Length: 252
Ligand code: PGA
Image (tube, rainbow, N blue to C red; front, side, top):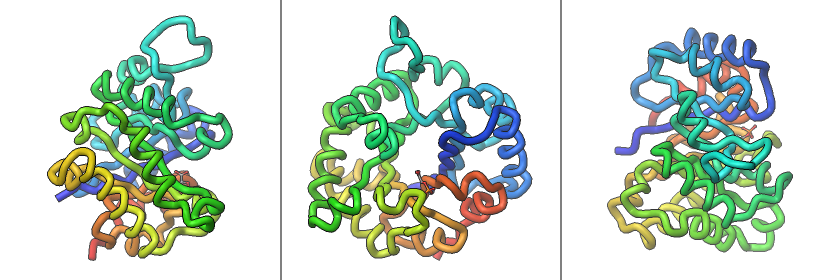
């Protein structure tokens, strides 16, 4: 059985004190949760204060990005080494906003993924097709390339730490969620790719999250799909009430 993960990607929102308020409100709203892993991903400048606020809590902390070197002359960058130092357990890698706005490519994302694993942290590798790619019938090809290059040279023994997030670009921040069937189709395909590369055992263990306009009113249907192991939530994770409801999704 794969333990579900519900992760909130706060993107470029919230000051450090607002982020602490949000996480406290979330703790009040959701109460103790033991049947899912809960992760929040604030901006870099709020990570340390949120880490302190989360002490003793089971909510885990993720960064939204990193640079694939440990230390050195890389002005403006933050490494997995430093993220671990302040208490992060996860790092989001290859989010579509990084791919699109910052032109990050699969090989660079693969370097980040390796750097995250080298620190013993868990990467959350985001993949997903654009609307144009889906309409051109290229969804499976795109998912295959992003998965294969993203996970290139990753040891099977490290795969239990890796989380994958399927986030169709056309569903992110648009209010247009993939249907339950579309999500399941993509997730089953991704799990099949993992099976080919790493074997059946490992493919059954890797958590594959769905992301893209997950809301309180669609989370239950998505989570009922056999290959949907959780959610990566943007907009709705900024409201404690909504995120709290998403965390307490109802299992079928
Ligand atoms: P959204 O964002 O939930 O606001 O669509 C999801 C994401 O970008 O991870």
